[in-house]
Image (cartoon, rainbow, N blue to C red):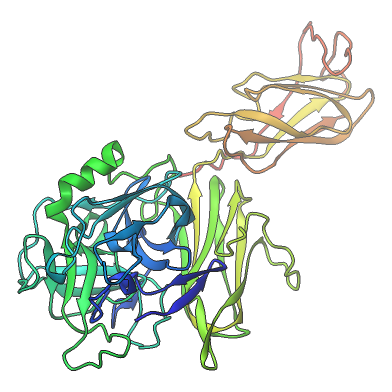
Length: 517
């Protein structure tokens, strides 16, 4: 039952950790006959890196808390002693989410009753704490009462499909199967059994069995193990078509809640609208062979704080009789830069599965994914989260040899939209034909050069301390209008004292405000 996947440049076993079950060789843990999906964004791929690592599935139950199977994080060293295992270290853990990318762990917690009494897994439950919270994805809740037999469950995981080659893991799939009454050696008290419907397999371990569908679905089970179909050869990789067993979440709910603590919540972290609640997303599912390239675009609106691009799918392929790691090219670019493959967004990380642009300009962004070696099925996801300030262009008229002095209410931020963090105006480019003093609240003073008539301009960004608006132009029309305006006092350096005497005929024109809905 053992096979290898080269993921993130490291060797990991893509068995859903099931090869670490010791003597339970006939048991197994993608959803057989399931459908590729981007639904249930809180369900992610759990990668345990290292020579005895694996690919599992996990689910966010808090912004920094992941629920998974115990055997995914407890590595058996000696198959003659299956109850003795080494807990993986946080440094070995990676958690991948389609709409965000890869997160690292800060702690790994195994249920104290985890074990294999009577040759069956019990308390197959673990909690992983992440180094950083996940923003923009709503965690999923857990049940407090076990589902009764006949209840239809939704199964989600990144595991193997119906092929028997053992490496086709990494595509997120869902299936459906009703709960059955457990029979010996399983027990309804600690296990949740399924005899018919879609099946889980290697790589699905740790994934949720959901009661209900959509955003209100609750985690009722954690994929644990299963049996091969009767008569299937024991010397072959399991077909994953026998009875399937999950850990009964209701039984372990108190322990799960204790480990999650105050982080246990179904509310998304962050101030930006979450996936499914306002965040924009484009997805693609595609089968590819060596040399294939796919592109997808997303129209990014103003006010976007972060733009994320990720891929997930097969990470190895058969090169003759041997398995080899795939190689890929991933880029995220603004606009359409034909032939400029080197124009990769600098935020594409070294692990090669995620690109991120902070405070991106509005307009068309293009993702490009190329399979340079290998073949397989892949999912691409582009997601735009919006909680950045929005700034709009402005235009002002000033008479020749005069000046303009605005207050905050009619300054450059007057028609802009701030974020939940507030913010201030930050100068980007100064005018070429006059002196400017721009204040954080958006008010400014401008005095054109003597005898200058024409168009001057400056640009600024609305900065909230975390994200910024796009660079925005302010046009200054200096008109020849004798007697329309006057200036008293002279500029001193870049700042000057303006004393207004008499009538100032200074007219201001602002373009229509286009506010975010």
